[in-house]
Image 1: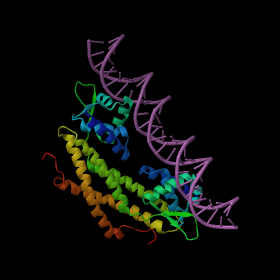
Image 2: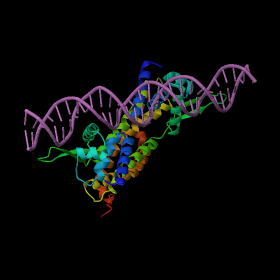
Image 3: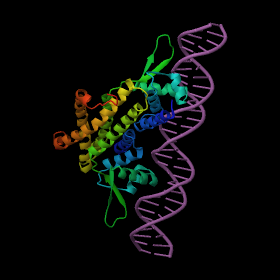
Image 4: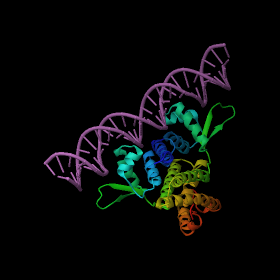
Length: 158
Length: 158
DNA sequence: CATAATGTTCAATACATATTGAACTAAATG
DNA sequence: CATTTAGTTCAATATGTATTGAACATTATG
């Protein structure tokens, strides 16, 4: 593992943190991406990331739970290997849209506690209406992607 | 300020935290929403939220910076008042989409550090391609919203 | 059965950062 | 000019949580 890759792994840690996950989750994803192996053992993750067994254990469980990685078992081998899942872009997106809707709905809930309608009432109503509507639009956009994606994915080695 | 509203203000704090902002930012938004005033003074926020001046000062500055609230000044009055801005749903959405693109791009960056293309390469490439494409789709969806929103916003008091 | 290999659990620690609170600036008022 | 008002700054504190590390469980192996 060269130093460029090690730097990248930390960068991935920060990116996942920005996205609301933990640094270690990002490091594990980064490691699995750049390591040029199909799957990586628990032990290699621990040594490669210089982290504790507890941290690897807990974080791999989280990543499996949200579907970003998956365990790989081999016959005659007691170890657990992990690899990046082919988690669908739509699944990730839908999760975020739900967060949006919840956020807007909490704002709009405040509206129902007011004793009068006013400028803020209108704003919260538009917020929640928009994000709810947006959720259904996203479904159409995802369908469009499925039919058109070949036009937009350009491999570096076609 | 009744107890239902006070409870709501804390709930708003949690919602903003989920959205990557601070609890106090959410409390201030919550207060401004349910207080039934057009604008609220620094001092009222401090007393109403039982927070320190430092906290109100720092958090109002953040909320102004990101456009969620705006200061209101009155002639002959030294105080600063704050109110919820009519921040455009599109502005908020675009900010989140940028975060998405950055996230996917970091994953894809790992791809360029690999010595071979493989399953993970394909996945990161699709991720970043999708979210970049999605960014432009969102612009069209926002235009659609502007022309159609009247059909989707239903006031409780029409 | 004794030992090694593979993970798990959870209390303790480390770490980041949100919030406080006291000291401060700046401007208005009498 | 002295005092009050309004808000800012920043070092100290509180708080939450990510991570560690040691003890433990479990299963395989000789």
